[in-house]
Length: 339
Image (cartoon, rainbow, N blue to C red):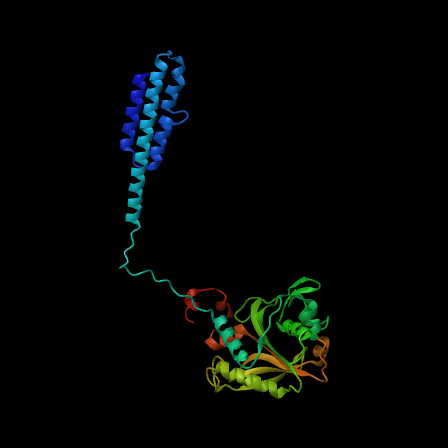
């Protein structure tokens, strides 16, 4: 048994001299000192020894164990140091080398235009109001003087969650919520996403963004609306921009008007962008219908107001001469980096 112990010690020491990594060293430890290791096997056979041999072999076995454990610990330290040095050599940073340039992001063209619109109206004293995109039928239609049989309520035009809940088709619903909670004077814009059951094409999308405005106070007239829209158009499209109002119908305003701006490309002379008309439609507007004021608990005999709404996508298309709305949503970096 003495010879076996000596052979185990010599074999283990030889393997440790050749080991190259800590994982292999652990395998050697298990092979010789583990529960089923070679040295453990020798110790289990000590019951067959005589009383005189047992302490001698036991002492020798302990000496071998201590020798191997000490060698394993020293080898582990040597290998750990070696691995650390190799890792440091691999991960050495040359501070004189130029760094990796990380490209800076840019604002999306819709965000650029929306920020400009907000800036214009905040400069005129407007506050920003927000509301839910999943809206009650009452706020989206009924409170805005859109009766049950109105075409806008058709499922071909509106996404219905159930009979009383829809995806809002306009941010006008936010105006109603504000008028219910806050009494005049009111001066707000309502930016946000809206949803309509439209097929996707060059000028339509089932999801798009609007900015609607509302002013309610004593003595508000159509002249105030026109003056506000003139300031807005000149701020967004240039000082030489003119506006034109055309009679129209909206259930929640009376009188109502579509608003055109002189073409930003040709200045009103006529070109491809304005289809040689000299004017480009950008928004709808009008005086708040007395019934809408009544629905919100505001006396139309005391107060009056005006409202307007514009599509952010259409405005962005005009600002940047984009001829297909889908380009704004395809996330093509080649297109977006132009802005």
